[in-house]
Amino acid sequence: MSPIDTYDGASVVFTFGGYSVGVWIFYVLAVLLFVGFLVRVAQHENRAYAALTAHEPVEAGPPVEAEPPAHP
Image (cartoon, rainbow, N blue to C red; front, top):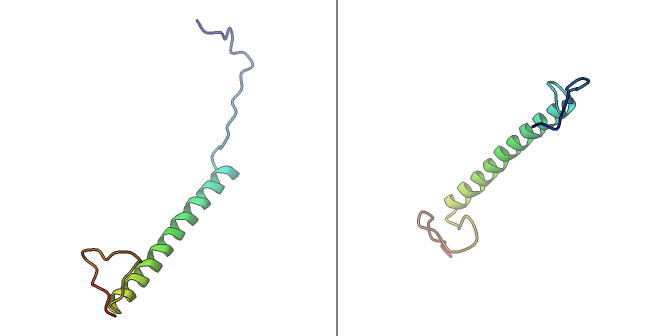
């Protein structure tokens, strides 16, 4: 039922083989994105902690249940 009659002369094409440039590009990109995510989380947490200790709202908008009210 296959339209292929013979596999003589068939070859293999690997898009990203082991230790190829494509693998390294995606690996480095994944590491950079993960480190960037951790840096942004740390920045947000530091800013939020400073706002909470100063009794200021952490973000614009209505206050949430766990956030202290803003004091004028």
